[in-house]
Length: 266
Image 1 (cartoon, one colour):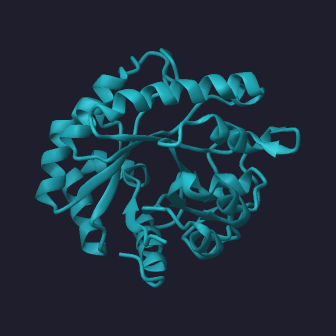
Image 2 (tube, one colour):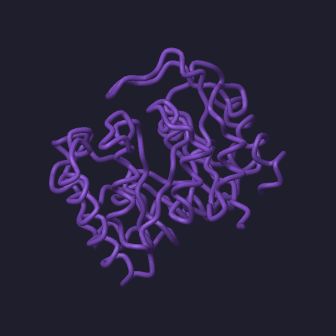
């Protein structure tokens, strides 16, 4: 069993990064983070690499589109980078794994569409291997709200992935989709290489395409974080994240770090 390293998804502090990147990264380091998970890094890899080095931070993982085809799932006016562009940027940042963070809900409605997505990610993984970088997928709730023959779409997806392709399981979104996350982690086994340790009351449940309003600091909500962490025998990273948080974001992030540190993670 591995002991996951603590990290934080920078999307959590996206507004703070825009306002003052150096102060934000310094605050994360002061809390105790040594790792961060970058997003939107392809066009600013040099800038981020310099900033991370200045603040004693590493970015072993990052988020970038790899299986979404030619249309950006978030903004169709923004060009989707090629896998080579993604991996070249990831190399500059010293990443070991790039996770695709989103594939549209309509691609989880049939086994055929799920298989096509898996094939696209498998193809990206072949390219990534040439750079020494692994590939994985990060879920939201669309991979759980639709079941096929009584099984979650994400589980069917996992069966079509090459063995080298991992999963970064977002525990909040999986719970919001109806999963018993500890049991799910057990079923997925070594496929789970990272966890987003994110909590919420799950009241109200977030719907597809909406910003959640129920997220709370880790350990203060209804998501079975401790049980899922205990079940994640192969997870390399435990990553703090908020999609949205109405309180003091820095207090929330610190609580997330302390929740993981109290369990022996560092």
